[in-house]
Image (cartoon, rainbow, N blue to C red; front, side):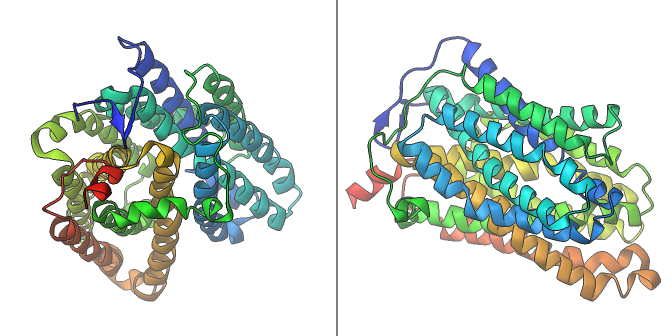
Length: 427
């Protein structure tokens, strides 16, 4: 990860010396994930507590749809017209207004409008994930190796939000939406204090093709980027299985403090993220990503083993969340920053969010729900936790396939981290 401060063919300004800039970017990441972690983990519980259990599935599905529709358009806007930090602030202020309206609508029992507001909010929020990554990686420049240390504060923000919501007694309350709105406004104000970087493609016209991310499709002509996106999508499907059914499965195993056990996964994420620079210096991007992809199969095999009475295997499976997430999402973001030319930086990061929270989340949600209904629900009363084996077997196989695709389809005769434009001009 050491080398010239170049993304694409554009040299980046050397970041401020010392730790001042990384600390400021860490605070941005903390607030970014605090906004998300304030309400998403308990959304289902909040809806159920307000007589809206019937729309829980649709709420999560619309979240995935919003992640498909919005990030590329907003990324194109950020690349052309609005400074990334300003766009981050605008989106969070608009999002705060929308999500602060949810409690009133939900209390009135208007479920369709509740879904509409959640969709609009997610359409505003999802692009900010890629924007935050792009801002941090651009400002860090040649010190991009520090990104994992910056990004870990996002996880800390997620955990902090959960603790804050729990302490305030908001876990099943619509107050989580006010918490998220407040954190969003705070982040919007803070974003304006971050060092200014101009839109990398300032002055360029925004065509319809740009609005749907066609400009960024040029990246797929590079085999490294194309294979990465395919594997990100496949891994995101496994993540969808975990997000949807890990907590009910742990409860089915007889674990009472499910939230406490899942917190181990967040703690492990903090621990593993700081190992990324060490891993990259030893094994490089390709094998670090391969490790992250392969570990998903291990975690689901441990879940299957837990269903056979080895309860410790479930704890180990949760504890692997750090390496599963960090060596998949964080390393993926770092690799994209190396491959993407500067004028496509925001759109390239948006593709990561699109594949994970959008297509991957939607496919994982639908597929896991179908498998649960077909295989687990009819057999659980008789088979107990072992009846969950078919559900977890699918992502085991998918993770193994993903790892093989990455190892064997990633081009061996191309430089691992040379930017896309340079590779293409070399023919």
